[in-house]
Image: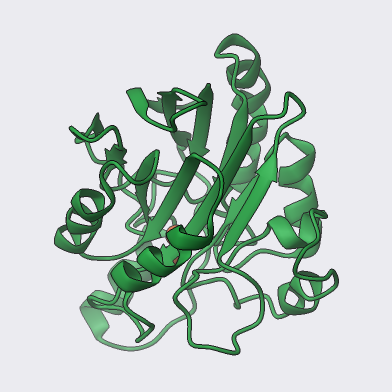
Length: 265
Ligand SMILES: [Fe+2]
Ligand SMILES: [Fe+2]
């Protein structure tokens, strides 16, 4: 079984480069399951129902997010528009599972491909240098007790490399992949851990690389130099699609190989 995970899609430049490459990659690489992190897909901040639809139309089975999930408020109503047991698109847009109790939406989705293969996607957020949420390690334990699928992909949306590496080891042998998102720079440490879990500290941003992690670089520089707040705008230049291809055994959920992708114009 072959899984493609596309890192944080950032703004219109990110959506365009993903649109440009995805069809070809899905066909030539014979991808069975496609998961896309969409937290920055709407102008760099959040995701709208229309953009979620656009990504589903491109073939995504599940969309993950992170700290920017609520930037576009209309996504709340969208997520709540179907019941918890639904398999409709709004149920397949996730927010981190370890947000405090009562937060709208869901952090896990369990589904089935047309060929009968079952899978689960879990979204978690880190606690180091980030807003407070529940312990991602313990929440993962709790959720794994309920998940029936053997193929399980975890998007760990976190700032600190140490926390991401630690969760990779913690879940090794229990999930198919632990993939980092949020820091927007692809790391060169993709590998399969000894227990059969694919790991990468950060898959990287699918967006404009002529930028500071997606934002117009002049605006970010101005903020660093002046210490004054200013409006951030999504950059456009040098778009690339960052993704990780994972090969795994569909019956056991164990990963066998990983391949990094960074596709430009
Ligand atoms: Fe992001
Ligand atoms: Fe983020």
